[in-house]
Image (tube, rainbow, N blue to C red):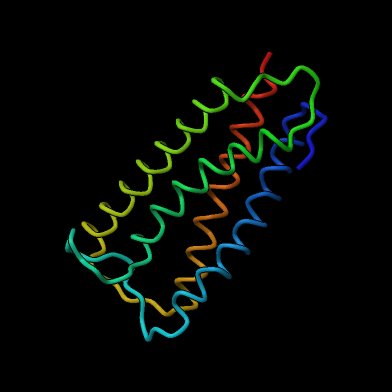
Length: 151
């Protein structure tokens, strides 16, 4: 996304588009991981489980997207006198990464505590993974560009 305007509506629009693209792309990628399964667990009650679950895949997805997309948002934002990547945007990327990790793990633990081990279809798992990726991408894009535009 090329951002030349500092309006809040433009930032939101850019974040929504980034989130949409990432939702579709990561949903499709996830489909190839789960398409041959009969059911997919949302979460499992064992910390050492080797079974693939929706939320066990969501944590590394959210963490990697947060770091990568902070850099992408920085590189694609076209404004004069943009701050240098190191150290400001690098530490912002790290902040987004730890935030995504904390939220994803907390949500997974709370889900398991209140909902238990629920099985869903591979299609629903794909949609949920896409939604998670889209939310992370949109929020990270918005927060990164907003920080870059701060004077």
